[in-house]
Length: 465
Image (cartoon, helix red, strand yellow):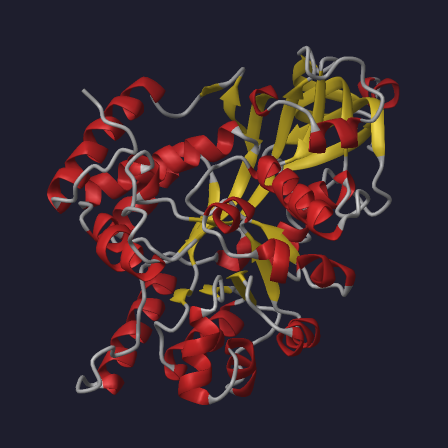
């Protein structure tokens, strides 16, 4: 609805809107009006076209429009410029791959290389319809990364690499914890959230696993609660985390986090592949969020088909958000993969339907970030973060069910245009704010430089001559 004579900057008419509002309305031959960074009208074209005076009118008849997607977990540095480089070989354990390959590649980057990688990640996300992301906590040069992200127009929350546990038993644990807490406090002060209104800000993001002391966990949670932020961390992708916590505390990871008082709605935990029923109960009781990264889980051999409890999480009201990790930027593909995995594992073709995929990619992401009033649906007053999906493609055919077709079968190349904060950041598949050709060239050069600096061998599966 809108008031007669409403002034708008942009009016898109004739599109099909998947609103994700409380009634889950899908509006055909619809209109969407934007003023500044906000949605000011949503409804049928005929009604809105006669009551809105817009500076720009866009014919939307070939498009399905959705809210912008939310990527709950993505490594925006390291991976984007070195993705084609194999991390270790078949004889390396998962731990060896992390310690001898993955972490050295991350830590070999210069500030400029991290800046370039962050821009590549942002552009990749935008091209798949993601408008908001939570970074995975592996940024080293935070200032350079934030500077680079600002140029892309994306909305996100980022954290500097924080490991506050003294791995050497002879080291000063109090000093390690204090240094980590100082990083958390400093980044939040330098890049304030502004009550969720800042497009880019820092959150107290932890690497997770067994890398931080209890004092660091408590400080991160207290910082988040005091400023209305979120804590995000990796936990339990494999048996290694439960085994470590059981050996040290005689409790599983989520049991320990609960005991020290750091579970709650302000906490988002990524992976959670290897949890038991008691930990599932704690997720439900605490309101903590779960971030599922299907590509990483399947490629990493986490065993989700055998032990994963994500369908149970959804059934019991845990807020499950999708993430792409460092593997791919296509959030809808992540949802499709999740649905296919558990449908096959449980032999239930109705499990995780198309509606659930879209909800996880939008509403659940908004809720996880504490932003249900700002993003996640096409409603008056919310941020103008939305995506135009081009249906003038053979993979779409006639539209019988826009929700099902988009979630399950529409091509990734169908993302035509993207708006963030009312700014068109992608127009007909091309970035509007950055020079894509230059970025691609810079990324290739930066990726080669990073790998050369590590002195790691390039292990290709077949000989290259």
